[in-house]
Amino acid sequence: MAQVSGISDEQTSTPMSSNTILLRISRFNPEHDDSSQFMEFTVPYERWTTVLEAILDVKKRFDHSVAVRYSCRQATCGSCGMMINGKPRLACFTKISELNSNVVTVEPMNNFPIIRDLAVKFERLFNTHQKIKPYLIRDDSELESDEKEFLQSPEEVEQYIQFANCIKCGLCNSACPTMATDSSFVGPQALAQAYRYVADSRDKGKDSRLKIIDDSHGIWRCHFAGSCSQVCPKGVDPAMGIQLLRGYLLGFRS
Image (cartoon, one colour):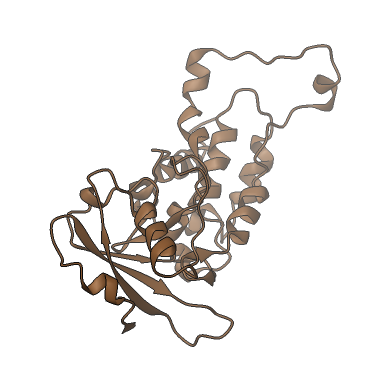
């Protein structure tokens, strides 16, 4: 990528020290740019400063036009996923002091179309998530009955609760090498959520979900690189969910 200087006179007057970092932000607008470029800013930080706070500092003091998606600022909404020093992370959950680098490079997530700069389109993630029917499926007769609760034991909850922590941030899909080569692959996020419902004792949609993912662009396209689980900020472990789903398809689980 080409580099352009985005350092103002005010920035260059601040020497690099233990409490500043060089923040490199990828800039790209597909409507009129042929390629992405980096703009660089010297940004002060404290021990608790997150990458998102550094980016917002740049927007406030130097360049209002930097495009970045964010909302909750507490690793709950999943909005601020991006590549930070080459790894998919949540910007609001990543402290600069923990990166152990004087240079922090932020880029849009891989495997997602770019809207502008650090913001990407989530349509593919949302479409594949909806494809696996991410809701409890019950018989119509049961839903029409007077029974209002379907109770579970702690052991039954334990079977799927880890996978219910997904915040749809897209980091797992960004890290997945198969997502980069197969535009029809359902992706680790959707597969992990398929397991979340298949493993739920209240659900009766197992057969229909397994049929959806038992496809050449479904679960069998996963090469088990495991990178999806390494980047998940909530410990969902999509790779394990995918392996457990294969157990159902191969008849090892019922």
